[in-house]
Length: 156
Image (cartoon, rainbow, N blue to C red; front, side, top):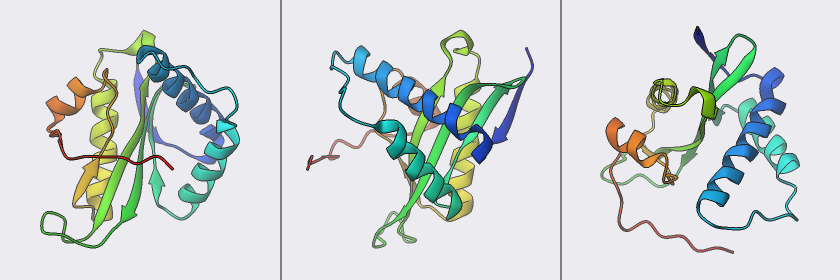
């Protein structure tokens, strides 16, 4: 097995989106939640990735086994008012971390994570945030991510 890594381009976008939907579905099932049937996620994801890849506020690295995408990562860049621990105000929002089940536990996710975190560093981000799945917590903790007990969310 010879794994290669490359940046996501428009050519891989459809497969990338399908893998993102697989990832989200897997997370819903594992957490015991029912997957919503009335959401056109594919169209919304295509629109998001197309726009943000074009303006440079989203980047993804892929793990490839030949022509097959076997792992994905994603980093969105956002900006908020600067604060003491992030004087640039630039944040990376990590998403789309997914490895095909047949390729897990081989260091692929760690390599993808390293690459997108480096993208955030290059963009000038002062921090990277993620809402981790139960499966991802070990990877992120081992990488150096810390829990933020004050994180809250309000659904609209």
